[in-house]
Image 1 (tube, helix red, strand yellow):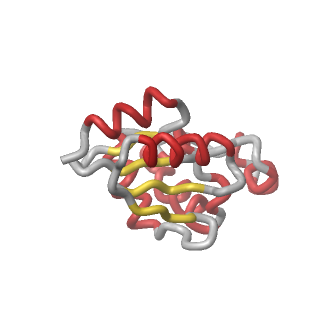
Image 2 (cartoon, rainbow, N blue to C red):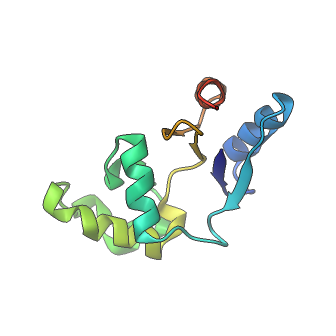
Length: 121
């Protein structure tokens, strides 16, 4: 199990705290320091069952600078979005947990973290 976090994010800190309380075996990835590649984002999106615009933090200054609110959200535009997330990791919703069963979740609530814990091997 891996969790992508920004340590400055309260939801990330809460998720890590809950993982620790449950005795979970997990790896922390500080995704701002070690940004995911476009390929890693494609894999995680596949595990999440989401599109890149679904995990984009549209209110971030980078999003406004790029004009993301005006970008099309069609399959043909998917790679453009993924490349933007890889180049600007602050745009990625957090925390993201990749579970041992091959699934993933955007774990912004205790319930989502518990769900990921339930799916560990």
